[in-house]
Amino acid sequence: MNAAPHLRPVEEADYEWLRRLYHQVRAAEFAILPPEQREMLLDSQFMIQERAYAMQYPGIAVLVIEWGGEPVGRLLLHRDGAAWRVVDLAVADAARGRGIGAAVLVQVQAMAAAAGPGACVLLSVRPGNPARRLYDRLGFREAPGGVEGVTVPMFWRSGPASGAGFQTLCAGDTPP
Image (cartoon, rainbow, N blue to C red; front, side, top):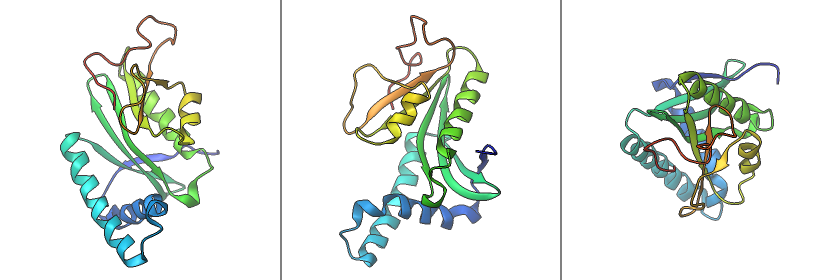
């Protein structure tokens, strides 16, 4: 990878691109549906997801991931005290395999570490999702308690991995 992806706040002009990205990322789950129904369902889910995340995570940062000046993904990031929660990270099909997702997570880890000692990054992953290998490689650990519903909560804490508190979440926080 020759350059780091750039993160910027979403703008009104990005909405249509973000809607198409959501369709692309989720289309395989609904491939059995006729195209018209699939489009309507995905549009509906996109709007519902946006509202739900805004309610669940007040102040959530909706960021566009750019690579070479072009949008290639979206990051939903919520900060609550020492906890930085990666609510969602999506990279367009055409941009996958370039290390963009990994570079974005490393940027989030750096931002958390710069915020002070004990900061942590939280995320969730479905069992069997290939992204789990990336999270493991970047130092994320499974949160105490393991699988919750359909996801595995994971966290990364700034500072040495050998400290006694490493296997605990940020103070006062709950798994994603």
